[in-house]
Image 1 (cartoon, one colour):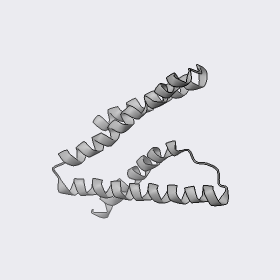
Image 2 (tube, rainbow, N blue to C red):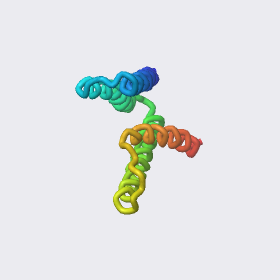
Image 3 (tube, rainbow, N blue to C red):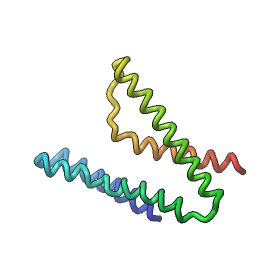
Length: 120
């Protein structure tokens, strides 16, 4: 439930920040503050994952969660490293670093059910 609330806040604040930055053209200091606001629930999402690991009493569920985290981190690290080298060496288009956390979330969403299914 905590993660759902943080995710909703993140998406809402991100949408609002994009709208304000695109249409109102605030001063640079204000634009920086507005751009940072959506990161507060994003950091909360990371902390909530840590709290879940601490609070989960079922060792199996905790293990699945940890494995999902590790696979997701590994996939993100591999893909961003490969893409970074392609940017440097093969003139591939720049991928904004903003996409790293959403990619991690997508990989986690894929890894978790696959790992759960493996143990059925």
